[in-house]
Image 1: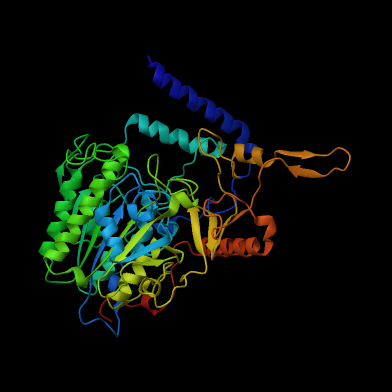
Image 2: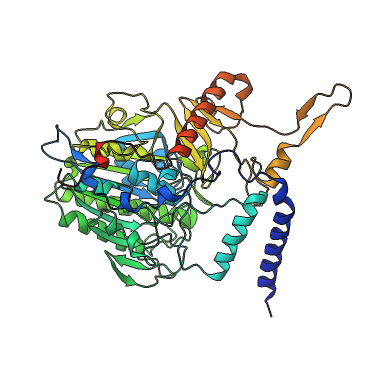
Length: 541
């Protein structure tokens, strides 16, 4: 006999299936935007997977005499307003605030996605995540029965507007994507990663191991700390099959591994990517931090994250590497349940400012002005081309790189954004675009489960869009709720509260064209491959 809980799940599944059967024949099979079906073959290209990185990435003519070290620290689910240097009064972050005072603080920096896996793909490849196929969260392979049922319900409910979920195009980062460590190895860098990967469950398929995507050293976990079992790895060896709920030591262990990598590679240029588990739910602050913060368990986890950053900075200074190292700190997306957006609209999982605007701090003593600020709109896809140029590399020449070199805005040489437009995806769909001070949404779900979603393309969304009234005498029809598109002037409305699309039709039209032109290119060439002589070259030619 089924338990009452399981019976309820089965009943809910049946209701959704029946509803789907009733409405599926009355709705279009393809909705506008990137949810439309595309050919998945380019995401599974064995020939591209096998190409050496050196065919596309080359040393430049003006390589630096002393190559800088790079340390990129990517927090998990940290909100825009969760550091003292970004406004919080409830959490103490002395090390990160010291980093900001000694370097550059970005005020309009965005993650390339509103959830973790695609954002990480964007950071490591310099490309909008949908090009890589990592369009949504890549969940662990060994999910529980209950979790698997939940995802099945989410897939069905998405078409009805009761949930929001689409499987990514791939089950892990394709080998054909050139990652930051793979590119930097061309310039002779030692490469290491510590922390959460989340670009393919390598505990089930070793081809997704970070060591197979350019990292010489790896220590950490395959996915988020709420996807059990949570195994702990060093390089290609599983050290602990399941950390389970014994996670209080994870932050300290990962920090130890990061410091160890710095010590082991202090005499050569290195790239270290640190992806802490914090501050993703569930929170497991260690005894030294538990109960310390005025912001509850979340604040405790942020303060331990800050401690870990301090240990990494201390290791750089102790080995005399501080002046030779560019340190970048940011977050993979906005705050989730806990955490501060500093008044920005939306949270993790939403393309609004609160879901994707994140802290970003850059420090390089002697090269970046201490205490400076960058207000230009920028995104984590810009890290890839910036580090390659600073390492004296050019390329990749065989693909579109959506990111732009940040050195101009970081150094103060050019305060203008390197982007004419920045796209905001929600899963496979481009919901919005940032152009100068304007944020435009073609359509966007303004409400989330359990309130029905209201963007077009779902049963509920279509019903909401049709909520109109027609005057029987004049036959004039008006919409009874706020309609699309939506346009916000972030100079005076950073909280995206006032839709001014009808006052600025020219801005809206230009923004829509930018979205549609990008989509047309994507449908034609999903991976953004470029033709050229490199396609026929063999290694060594």
